[in-house]
Image 1 (tube, rainbow, N blue to C red):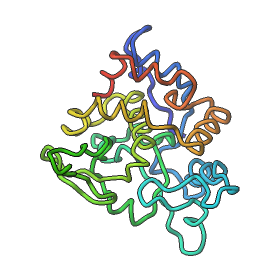
Image 2: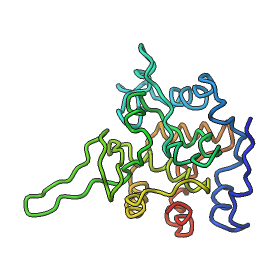
Image 3: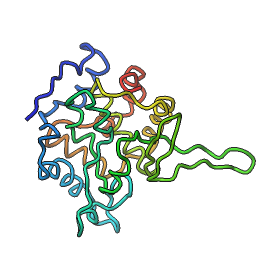
Amino acid sequence: MDLPNLTSLSLGEGGPRARWVKACGTRPSFRGWRNLKGSQKRALLHDVARDADDDTLPDGDYVSAYEEVDIDDMFSGRRQWSVEHVVPRSHINGRGAHPAENDPLGWIEATGAANSRRSNHPLYLWPDPQPTGELGTLSIALPNTLVRVDGTVHYVPPMEQRARLARKWLFIRATYPGIDPPSPAQTARAAQIVALVQHYPIQPAERRVNEHYRETMGWANPLLEKGGERWLEDVAWRTLIF
């Protein structure tokens, strides 16, 4: 097991990162990504996602992040499930191994095709622009496409999944220093990303996955727990991210 150096996760006894990490819990000593077997990835993400799915609903309620495929369908027939790092590994470990890539709270289900299509592009995590002009002209980024925003190519998730992805994206960035900064477009739209997370409802399966991690590992994303909105309103906390 890789034991991360947690001394860098604090900005002082009362600093925003120290308070945030305390709320997350006690970080387990996750095995390094390169040393994880397929069965271990399944146990840390895929099995948790399948347990969180509510099969009493017609289409379940845990779907993949990009193509919105029900988790049961992902595991039926031809293998198509994949571990997706919400903050790309190339943005995390460009200077060597980093504990942020090992944390399953920063992973999400994706089909292999969508994972490959996204590659290492930053995510389009804000709402589409509102209609403008007399004719209500729309500028909508189509899901699962690549668009250039502020000079950088971004991958566009479905609107219904952006808040869910953003909560994981914020978690990784608030928890772990020393990774690449957000894209210029993400930074310029920081208020829009935070507002989306504030106002877009937490998905039931999303919450159940987080509850599983809290109960089994003592480590969870406070944005998905009671009182999570206080972090989003904390200006000092936001400086950890943007």
